[in-house]
Image (cartoon, rainbow, N blue to C red):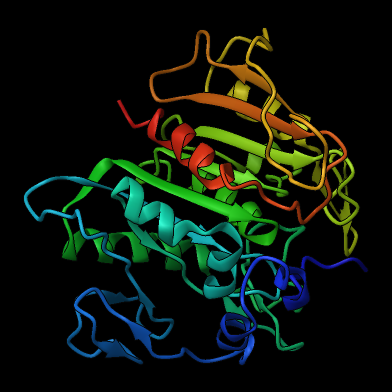
Length: 313
């Protein structure tokens, strides 16, 4: 069975060996992390930047943060077998947080019987040992805890996920649309049975997917006998849920998201006309792209551009 695991060796070309040792040294537990005031925390204690209870995560607070100003929040959800720290090394989202001035957290899923971190997102992905851990409630609670400690703009709470984390981003949009303005999914999908997704409000959705992905197929597939929809079906479902016109807008120029592929390889398909307030759907198809694209320097900034352009009304 193909499983959504980010191997540490994938990142050796873009991060230092020392960084990898820190990120990949353990599949369980939480390492001490540097906090906004330069201190160190292993389990939170009285540090207001550490949230998450028994799965602690440190909120990255950009230097530009002002407590009297409502500030966007971005949550990054890692792929199967990875961690928040490793996913951040891949996406480089901490640097984007500093540059764009948003609060940011990259939590960890729980560890399964194979020693791999995962999110219980959909029936297809990725609670492979049927633990039934309630990650939907955990991530929702994480957002509430951050909102209680920082001046979070409730109209600008966003999720970004890769692979298993991308599946989880779709799950969160289905379950907690009241909290989430927009999501960006790289190589994930939503429920195959769309009736299991009943968002209480419109959510803007960006689906990014490589057409040559042989782990989570662009055209859909199965994991452990459970089907998942392809990228086009996933976006089509959100077009319907958000009440958008089914007429696609393909006028945007292509993007260069994958440095392994020549030129601007990513086509952009938008569904924005006629949507309910706060809804939109967009597909970025990386032509020839794999499950782990070699992300261009502009990738994460382009994702944040989409998110920031789609706050709640």
